[in-house]
Length: 102
Image (cartoon, rainbow, N blue to C red; front, side, top):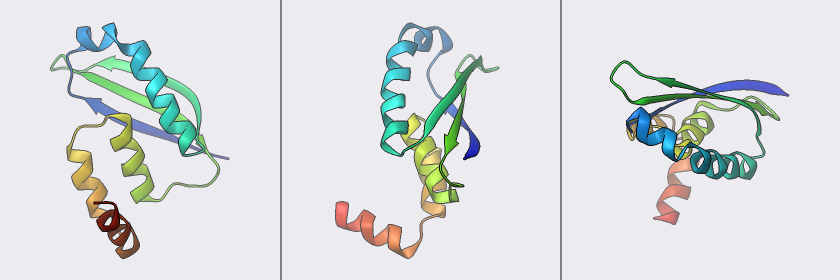
């Protein structure tokens, strides 16, 4: 098993995020399970601008490709900038699948 640490920047004020953190964790766990990933730990930190940083430590059955890592970070709630990052790693196969789904 491979270990990965995914950083997720959530553009929500810290105090507000703390109010629904439990719900966030449950829905993100479902995402990880969907991708056959095992949650090891979640670390939360208030950013300098009062927003929320989250580090999600996971086990993966194999190393994640840059595309898979960006996709999972995006689905975990990373800022929309991650979608641009995701598209930067998109291969022609990913592009065809995405166009078929749109």
